[in-house]
Amino acid sequence: MAGAFIPLHPGLTLRDEVLPALGLSVTEAAEQLGHKANAC
Image (cartoon, rainbow, N blue to C red; front, side, top):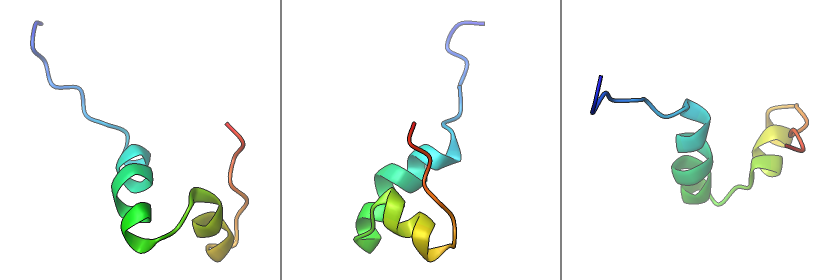
């Protein structure tokens, strides 16, 4: 199926668009949510 749309993972949008707009890193956002950021 040529030209099929493959949706982006929601985490990519969060990391690339939302967090920078809020002035947060992934680690800072995870800490504020009470989680540890994965070291992937």
